[in-house]
Amino acid sequence: MHAQTQERLIQPAIGISGSLRLPGDKSISHRYAMLGAFAEGTSRFTNFSTGADCASTLVCMSQLGATVEKIGEGAIEVTGVGGKVQTSNATLDCGNSGSTMRMLSGLLAAQEGRFSLIGDASLSRRPMGRIQKPLELMGARLTLSEGHAPLTLFGGPLKAIDFTTPVPSAQVKSCVLLAGLQTAGETTVREAIRTRDHSELALRAFGATLSRTIDSVSIAGPQQLHAIEAEVPGDISSAAFFLAAATLFPGSTLIIDYLGLNPTRAALLDVLAALGAQVQVLHIEEKHSELIGTVRITSPEEGLGSTEISGSNAAQLIDELPVLAAIAPYTSGGIRIRDAKELRVKESDRIALVAKNLRAMGAEVEEFEDGLDVPGGQRLHGATIDTGGDHRIAMAFSVAALRASGETLIQGAESAAISFPEFFDLLDQVAVR
Ligand code: S3P
Figure 1: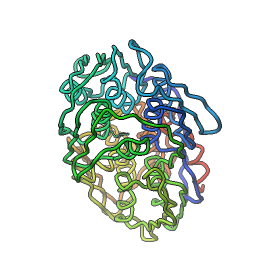
Figure 2: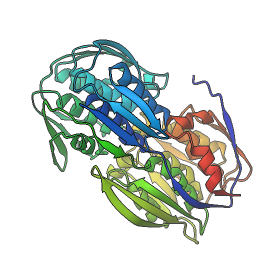
Figure 3: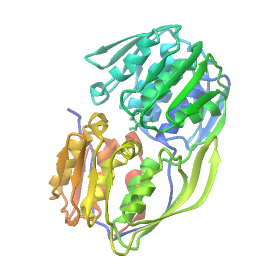
């Protein structure tokens, strides 16, 4: 059971207004930290994620011999180990972070030694068999406890494989690519549904060569990485809470600046537009192949319509589904979510917790193995929210609370800091009350 320590009271709002610039994307920060720590030379990152998850990655990388130094607000300098970690026996605490555990396993599988990767109670319930299989095919040995962490990895020289991911998972893809980076021959990962491609872009930014087709990526190893300087784009999965909040109040306008708009991450903007919001990209630029832009969202005067999210869209929106479900009762026609079974094995069972908390607020919702039906045209009331220690549940229901009648108590509100410690302060800044 997660100890839920901090509570946060959310008062209803009458609108959302203002402009924001958000801390760096969690997925990109993990990758820049890991690759910078593995590369030759000293990398500098600004607007690095402020979340606890990326801090877990940094701590693990320092244990492996990298030097991490804070050089300013959101700015770090990482001096890498030049392709060889400096310990052959380490216990690495990945905290709450699935990305850390799965990607780091790939990086370490090709390193000589025995590495134990542990995590908190939530991470120790999440499936790790999905990385065990490809890494063992490559020749590493990995032991789990009934498919879960603690994970012990016996690494060493590997052989290249051609692997098809069994579930849409950027973490699994990245795990195999990081092992392939260090392995003679060509390692290929195929995926039926295209997942976020930050690892591919980051590997190239650090100097690696890889080739891509529509549904595969190949890397011929071994290759050496070289340090870079980068400003991490704002996290679109964090922005999702504010963009969704803005759509709840007819006429509300919000601007988010320097926001990551990688096409494999930006499907949210299409969904909000499909619901009737006016979404404008005011500026766009590219840094290290990541798209970054300024987005203005204006909520429709007539309120939100309805939409369905399924198939590859469900995989691309996986982190945004809780907040979309949480605003769905306020649409006119509801939101239907399918093909999102992966939501059940995130930091919590997000399908079950979304349904439970919507019901606590008085909403009708139907739960399916792979999704939810949330009818529109509903009125919600304030309630006590069980976040299950899951950051995205805490933030999603803080957004739903803005249009409920009465106040809402978010239990375990501290979990927001896993990805977004500034969330509640920024919500107070843009909420009009
Ligand atoms: C992530 C991939 C997704 C996502 C997670 C971050 C990444 O997980 O839910 O928040 O950075 O690669 P899966 O790869 O398990 O789908």
